[in-house]
Length: 202
Image 1 (cartoon, rainbow, N blue to C red):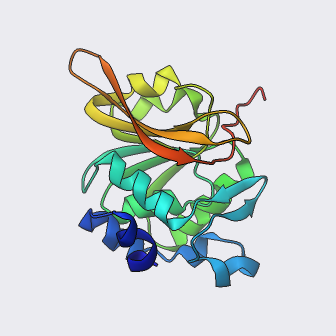
Image 2: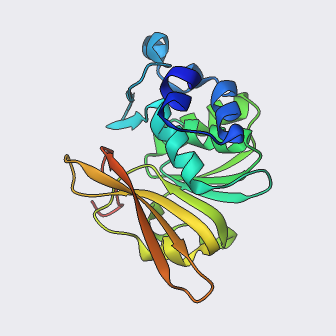
């Protein structure tokens, strides 16, 4: 998986590559889909959510630019796989999930595998200010605009990696950074398709 799907497409960060090799992806998918866990595609995990294809996880992780000792916020825990990759890299990971059943399942899987990840059930639009500022924030569902609270919870120079665009259509993956003066810079990382960003009032 790592060589054919990830390195081949330009992922070069050795910490990311090693984490992708190490985390047992099949533990984060439903039992009846484990044989397909390492394929080059997303998979359903229930409740209308998916686990992203391996390349997308690696691309978003590399774009964050984080490493051992960094504090990272993930919005959209889903299966827990992205959080596991970040934890495997030595990051301190906080992750939020709006679907209670998925949050409980992700927390159980992460705990069983020995990953020290803090999971919260709730709407991630406003982030998790108690643990801010963050060395990186990654969002694994697509809103139609950038949630300003997430920008405000970044350390200067840290990155927010997030897909943005309309529901059910092609979206754009963005990498936003904030400088010391609070100016925001955005970089497009290409076209993607993610499940919609869910709010408590949706």
